[in-house]
Image 1 (tube, rainbow, N blue to C red):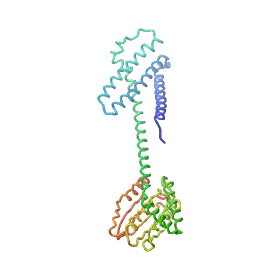
Image 2: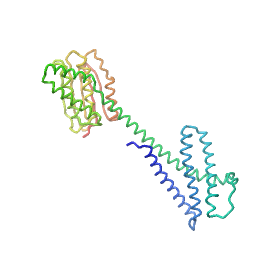
Image 3: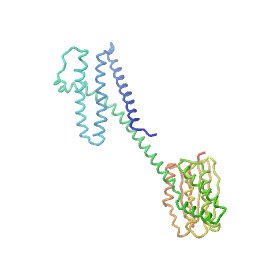
Image 4: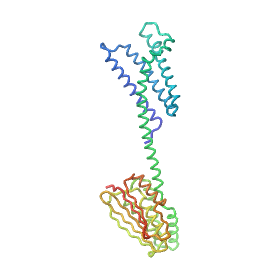
Length: 352
């Protein structure tokens, strides 16, 4: 779920209301315990006046000084402005108390502006230190919140990036397959072959699968194997029985799931680098099985001497990347070529 600026503003307002109210109550309770006869209304007013400037000062330091100077690594400028800001806010706090608050409950001569501006020790002990302590707590909490938000944003961005990559990787079906299939169907239609309608139906099922199942995160293996049958049937239109021999062994748990198009891409790869590149008989073997922990898919195809089916090819790299994005490191992906046989094995956690 994505949150806009309005949500973050509302979240910040709620946090500040809670934080500053809690800080004020904590200071009030602490001061109350220091007086045997209880805390007077005068002390409460002083605390409230300090509290207002603590809120203003802490927010100014964090949102203006830290965001504009400290975060941009302008440390010297930040330090100079920080010292100046603490002094100015402390002076303003004292002026507010002396000229705005005290006249309502104290009938005594007011401190002069000169005294307020020059009595640094009094400013430090009665104003600046309380401002620093409250500001330090507030800024520390804000840094923790910011770290959490940045970590969540990073995680969300990485997840969105992985989802976009998965969507891209799921679209690996060779467009030449569609072109060749349409040509074959056209040829069948010219000869009024009985296979024409069946071929159109199979192609429709494949396209339906790609469009509606492809975007999903996981699908049952049975659905992937069903569309593979359609794919094999369509590809077989291009080759005679002497050119192509296909065998399948299917024994797996019915509840197993995989990312869509994972096996189909490997089957396409076997046709592309097997029958598609060799004039001799091509044999393709598919084996799907499962145990208590893993679902195992094996596919092998014969290949000619001049076929450069690279185990590190782009298509296989994309499959490995898709597996890593979906399963992290909880999978096995083996690719080998020996004695004119190209083999691929995938082991993924079985969803039982």
